[in-house]
Image 1 (tube, rainbow, N blue to C red):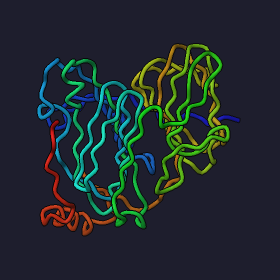
Image 2 (image 1 turned 90 degrees about the vertical axis):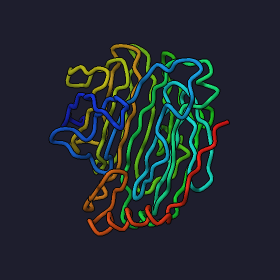
Image 3 (image 1 turned 180 degrees about the vertical axis):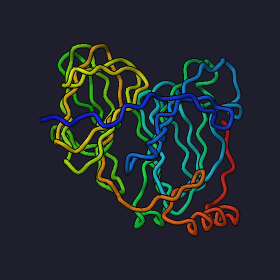
Image 4 (image 1 turned 135 degrees about the vertical axis):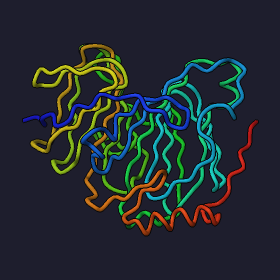
Length: 289
């Protein structure tokens, strides 16, 4: 028995601080799919010779969750108030747990801007349980070569960011149990994902198309979530397809969010705002080299 489709969400355009992007979550009637809070898909054509200060997202704070960036095209330069500086290119992932508070920026690298080109990323916000919201922040950059990959029958590949697939395990240790995979499938391939019946399961189609066992077909920039009727999900691909698969154990705690903070109460949100203003999340002075 296969899981059945619960939500079909078409990503819609939003303006985030002057950056036009596609938002699949939250959406009308679907605030979150616990523990997954937000999914943004940004794509732009960057002119050659641009200045990094004019692109990407400058210094801003986070507390209480993990912002995770998938770099589809381009090179992202991360800097944060804990002294981390790293660049991640096509096929790489930046996983940051903001914990008790951190300030970071994500911009195209200067070397990438010298030649210009397509720049495409996806960012997913993953909630943390209350027991992790006061932990020290952490940051782990993964370039494509750092991520275990499983070959598929017609040349596709499944990259394991976190969790286990066919006895392979991804390198990221998460704050609550989950699976995070990045799949590049070829036309006419198929895959079976298996997760605990208690996990919430989400697929975001970056490009291409797929067919569910029910016969329903889905295409680029659709987010699909599924019920808990079984522990498996069978997908067949009608075109070369790229997607992100997220499956996680619900945290089932109260969520109170305000801008870049995700906590469990209004008081904690006020504390986060105060701590940022008082400099308790550190200071980030960006370096451009």
